[in-house]
Length: 260
Image (cartoon, rainbow, N blue to C red; front, side, top):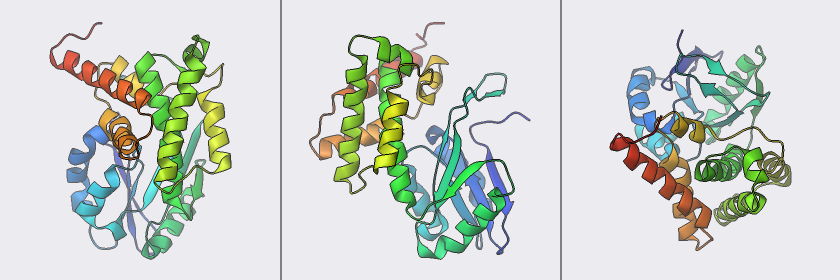
């Protein structure tokens, strides 16, 4: 079966809940919402695994905040044009949890279902914090990879690459702190090690999307964080340049002027 960005998974859980695992890209959010709406009835709960946090307001508005859990995942994969999913390293972890006390039973039941699989997972008691920590790292990775059109090792090998990566991370850390979700030490250490590994062959999926001439999550990730940086009057240089780069890409794509 060919897996697309709009793929969703529905699974019945022990306590009588139905669960929809929502895995679309942000640019498919509206069409994916339309696709799953018929399934969102009764005690059905939604576990979104989208990047960032911008989608939560839209999902809450559509389905009600008590039906929308929090969730995030760490996985380095690429969907090839032939439908094959490529997983180049061993990064694969799913984190989820209730955003409202009424969701606790459904979240626990989902964990019990995942316990039967080989997926690395965590039931979090502070999922919003986990989502902010993921965004702090991801936005730094995506903004620099897209801006320089390179993976971590290639950026690190450039004369000022390490400084640029560090500057991007520092800005995102400051945004999260101002928003009340400063990264905890273990998450920060992981982000630094992953983002500034001189041998890191990984890049953001956003870079792979634009290299393939496709759509991207620039507004959802980088644009959202840029607005936060400006709100708090923080250094927005990397975020601003990265979003400008993506918008210029959009203009070239719309004009049919992408190379290759």
